[in-house]
Image (tube, rainbow, N blue to C red; front, top):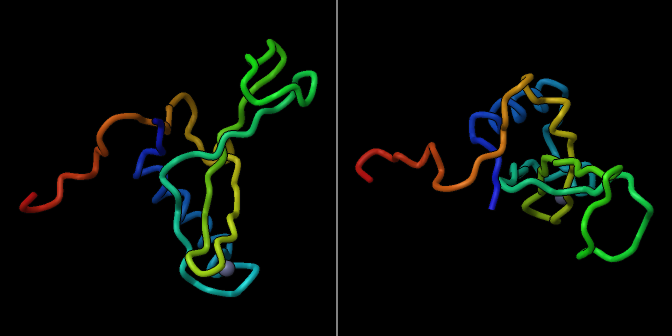
Length: 104
Ligand SMILES: [Zn+2]
């Protein structure tokens, strides 16, 4: 299953903090977590005909970055295209590239 590159999430987190995101807009808690897996949003197409059907040619999938409040569970979604560097894929699969912990 695909997940965001950790370095990408760090960059997005820094940018969101620079823009002023420091607490949950619902409950005010400051425990906001960047989720490793993208949220997928189907865009375009003929409309609702079931989730399991194939995507149409005029249909696309947006990959959204989710930030979840640890206290109330509210999720904020951000368009990954807004933060992507041109030509690079920020989604990876397989083992976490940053999991080389000292002593592990
Ligand atoms: Zn909250």
